[in-house]
Each structure stands twice: as C-alpha cells, then as structure tokens.
Length: 507
Image (cartoon, rainbow, N blue to C red; front, side):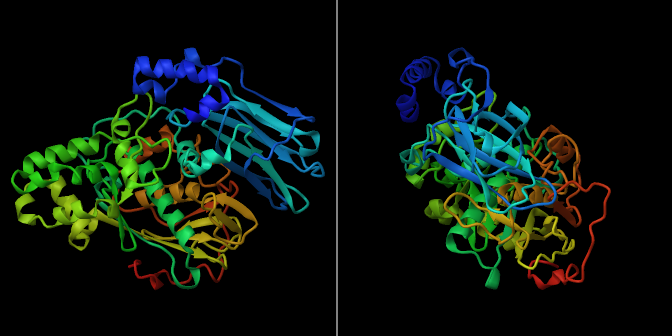
C-alpha cells in the first residue's frame, strides 16, 4: 500500500476502505468497481519525456531471420519501450498484462503492431489494474546492425521499492507462466505419471562449467520455482508429491511441510502417527499462495503465514519451497523418530524417508536431474545453433551456451556467451516438463511447444496432457529450438553423440 499511496492517494484510500470492509481476499483480487475503466492502449509518443526508470532491456543481436524476444516485468499501470533514434529497424510488438496474483491468462493491450524506435517511444497503458501488474512484452525482429537495444521503462518505478523487496525478480516470471483458469481439485487415490515422486535430486554443473555463487543461488531459486509450477499444475497428485528437492547437499521442502514440522503437531507422530498424518495432509492440501514479495528472512516468512494460507477465489495456489535450513531443529527432531513408529502412515513415512534417508526411497519414488551447460554447443540432440536445450535422457539436460545467454535474474550475470538472450526459467520449465514425461505440444500457448517462439505458459492443454499421462518414465531425448521447425529434421554433428554416461547420475 505504501507504493500505491505515494502514486495514487485517491485510489489507495478507496482500496484501504474496501480491504477493511471485505477482508483479505479484496487485497488479492481488486474488485472491478474500484478499478479505472479507461481502455488499454498503445501509442507512439515522439515527445515523450524520458526518465531514468529503465527496469529491463532487450538486447537485439544481428539476425537473418526474425527472433522472438520475450520479456516479463513487474510494473505500474504504464510502461514505455524506448530505443535509439538511430535504430531504423521495424519491430513487431505485442504487449499483454495481468494482475500478478491472477491465474487467468493475461489480457492483450496491443499487438501485434509495427514499431520503430526512431518514430518515438511506445507507450502502453492499462488502468484497469492497480500497480504491480505483470507485463509481458513480445518483440519480434531481425536487426541488420549490431548494438541495438530496447529499454523497458516504468515511469512509476522507485528504486526504494526494489531495495525494500517489493519488486522481486522471480515473481513476475513465474506469474507469467500461469495462464487459463486453473481449477484446483482434491487429489485422487491413483498416481499420475511423475506424481508418484516424493523427492527430486538435482546435480548442478561443476569444474570448468561451475557457476559463481550468485548464479548458483539463482539457479536454485529457478529450479524450485519451476517445480512449484508443475506441482500446482498436477491436479491429481497425491499430497506428498515432490515434497523435498535436493540440490547438491542442500534440501528444500514445500513450505506447508516446513510449517507443519515447525508446529507442535510433528511431535505427535511419536505417540499418534495417524493423527499426525491427518494434520500433515491437511497442511499440505491447504496450499499457500505465491507471496507479494520474497521474504528477506525466515521470521518474515513466518509472519506472513496467515495470509499465505488464506484462500482467495480465482487465484491458483503456488506453494513455494523453503530451504530446510530454516527448519533445522524441527527436522532433526522429526528425523530422530523411529521409522517403525510411523510405518502404517504412508505420507508420513515417505516424507520421513525423502527428508531424512533419501537413499532408502525406492527408485520409482525419486527422480534425478543433471544440468550441464555446453559452451561448445554440442549436445546429445546435435550442435545446430537453433538448439536452446536438449533433454538427453531421463536424467541429463544440456543447455547450449555457445549460441545463447541465459538470463538468471536481476543482479545476476547471464550464463553463456551466445548472441541470443533468453530467460532460463522459461526453458527450465519446458525441460522439466520432459522429465515429467510430456512430449512436445505444438498447439495453443503450451510451454511444451517445440520452439521458444511458440512456448508461453502452462495452459489447459498442457494440464490435460499431464493428467492423461500415465507413464512414470520421462520422455526420450527432445530438443527445444529457437524457431519453429515442425516437420524438419535437426542436423546432427560429430560432437552430438558424446557419451552421456560420463555424468555420475546417468545410468
């Protein structure tokens, strides 16, 4: 509210009254009656006053064929696209927006429209939603000269908001991968594909492909964020689905499990395992919602717990993962429980093994992913410069850092030296879909499309395929391409068939 009050006192006052009168739900989905009804618009303004408010930029490499650049930003009710007056290229632009908590698809603001930076600044407005909306920008073009950039500006942006944690780098990217109207359903008794997996073990690159500390932490955040998306998408998953993610030697737990462990209910497992299991399942099924801002401390996360647990009609839950270090004492107490005491409690037992003795989990109850970056561009799927990533087999995923630079988030260096920049989280969600067992889905907006120019989000078609999938074996090798090449064969190379068995996780 501090942000709204500073920029729109009248709107803030109305919203505060509504929140006080109608409860916390209004704070998540603002009633249409208090939202301005001016029509969303895009217009070129040659005389637009420029302010130092760039929140992101699109670097445009020289290209013979048009490349689709996707950017997701969190901004107020207006954004600007500005390029160099010397840039004579014409780009095709599509802009969409939505409230950051909405699970429905984003609404079109304009596009596709033709725009040239030399004509002026492209101004997009959407007064239907309050500040902190999610904006999705698609810019398609093939510049003939190097060095062109398009800045994305937010006139209402204040650096103090970023310092206060009000503009988290991951939230808009994750929110944009929600689309359509997801409807939560109670998990049935049967298992659906990857839903039987309780633990996920992830191996990050090492040695000459090692990541610096910021990149490594960013990759961890993106992995847990991508997993949270797929957990939310699997409507028919059992409650203990993907309860624990091990990234190297560090464990992450679904936050509802962490809060349960930290409660007095966990201690009841010693004397009454049946009751403890009931409270655990109830805690897991009461899924939490993606927070407005990433907490700066575990104490802050605990303070938010009531709002995270509240149900808001029309908003799909996305339960974040939390480092197990935050619940270290509670986990040690939980792991000290004799497995024989909880042997008759299936969910309790599976989470106990996944968190305390992962090596004792049956193979079909855990999954492994190995991530490798390929600076020479040679993947198991081939060395074609169109290949962004290759799902080599049930474990190994390779990313082409010769031809692409993977964006990890604000303040974090890109991974790779390629000319084309692409968000790592979007590619990671796609590749995790292959681990789940999905093949390419070239229709609609599915994130599982075979090319980056088509893949957008986890839509109803993606969810439908996920629920129909009964295989517990991940899909075979698949390449994720920059451009749509349906029906065309990707050429292989001598470097493409290097041994996958060089990685310890590949069997």
